[in-house]
Image (tube, rainbow, N blue to C red):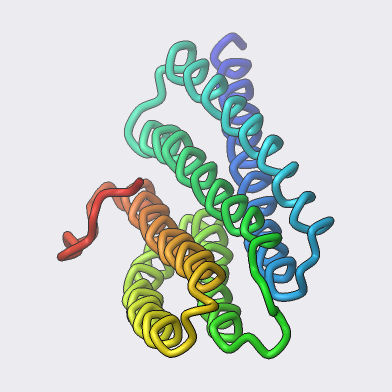
Amino acid sequence: MVAEHTVKAFDEDMTRLRGLVAEMGGLAELSIAEAMEALVNGDEDLAAGVIARDRRIDLLESEVDRLSVRVLALRAPMADDLREVIAALKIAGVIERIGDYAKNIAKRVGHIEGRKRFEPLTLLPMMNELAGDMVHDVLTAYAARDPVAAAEIVQRDAKVDAFYDSVFRNFVSYMVENPATISSVAQLMFVARNIERIGDHATNIAEMVHFAATGTYLPEREDVPPPA
């Protein structure tokens, strides 16, 4: 009877842990999309909502931390269960960083001048969509414990990186040709860098999902800096 109760309590804790990570991920996804919408439209109210939402993401991460420590201390999970708890703990930390990047983008909204027909700004939504799709798909892979989908997401990061390189070159050329726009374009370079980091962090989550599901690591990526 005691063993049955212990198993039920463990299952409840794991369900709660997965739910917290899923909630964090959903909020981060929303922030990524809304931050770019706010940037494109100059919507400072929407940007303020993204910035405020980051506090909720932070609180959820703290809850994941507390629950993970409790599960490790009281339930002593083994093998697959242990990997899943550790993965949830690490993934929550990465999602928190993704939320920070979305918040950083939202903070740029009031610093872009001459928004209408501003060519550099038109380059960012597609890049943001690529990174946002990676986040969405990796969270789906996490929920499904799907290592195949996780491995596929890792391959997609190269497309975001290539997009960033192209955007960066375009921004530099635009500033040289239009010196009066240097301040605004510099803000957009900062935004592009944050989007690129979102893609990197989605890849980090994919690697954790793969490890949690299989117990094996994906091949090491080359020329990838550690997460900031």
